[in-house]
Amino acid sequence: MTVTLDYYYSHISPWAFLGHDAFMELAKKHGAKINFRPVNLGQVFPETGGLPLAKRHPARQDYRFLELQRWREKRGVPLKLQPAHFPTNPVLVDCTAIVLIKHESPKVADFSRRAFNACWTQDQELADEATIAGILDAIGEDSAAVLAEAKSDEIKAAYEANCKTAIDAGVYGSPSYVLNGEVFFGQDRLDLLDDALSSGRAPYRPVSPAA
Image (cartoon, rainbow, N blue to C red):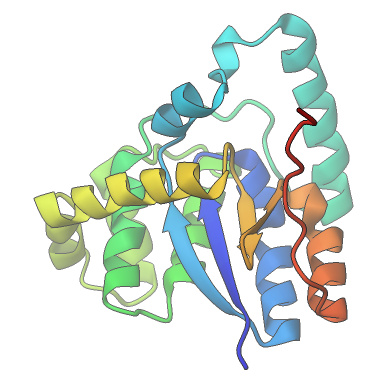
């Protein structure tokens, strides 16, 4: 029986970028199907107690930079700590991925990889249609058609639905990987996800506080 992994992420998340290739390899290793679910963290955070980066305590902001340096070295990813266009509006690039998902394109993972790279290594603006069009053209997609559909009410509704599904699943940040209802938050939890897939154990569940 094929295992399914729900992949919640934002294209402007450096952590999703750092873990993207490792997650793809992990899914391939276990023969798992991936449900790609781009989410808008601007909608997820207020519902789950998260804060946008600029509103976090300076100690948390400083530690983020330490971790980014550690993990870019660990993953061998040439991530820029302060790219030219971050933060930026992720809606169009996320919705573009949703169009590819809707049409069951096998190029979703490649699109996301290139989008991550555009922001985090190439200083390109992911809110710019020209940037997204260039990525679509590079992977052989009809950029004009895909971008037109990405702006449609149907795709915007699907994007909203992803946020609701994420919150209902207990997801509160990017990237989050969900296996049988169990959330693995952060690309630094991929080893634990690997262990769970290898063992085939029953999913862990939150424990309610004692009455």
